[in-house]
Amino acid sequence: MELTSQASGHRNKYTVLGTPVFALGRLFSKNVRELWELLPRYGVDTVFVSDKFTRAFPDFAVTTYDAGVAQLVTY
Image (cartoon, rainbow, N blue to C red; front, side):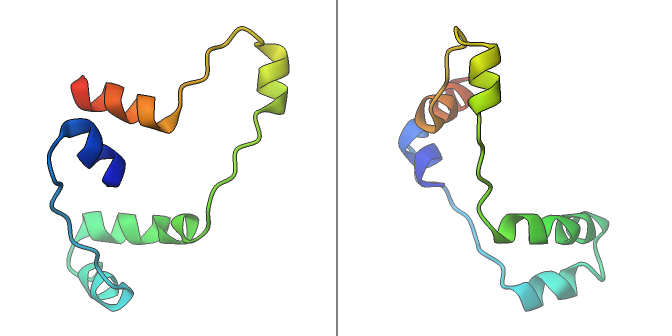
């Protein structure tokens, strides 16, 4: 959220829902129910190891998170 705020120049408004509220919401909303299924995946950090990719494509230009978010915001 901080990266998108910086890239867009606007303060993003958002709300963080606690697990109990999310659990209740899934009883009434199909969209929330589908998001609920993804929650365990986001409970831990995802680590990307790109060694094989880098060896296979040595000339591939890597985009940083900051640059990628900036490109998305201006798109």
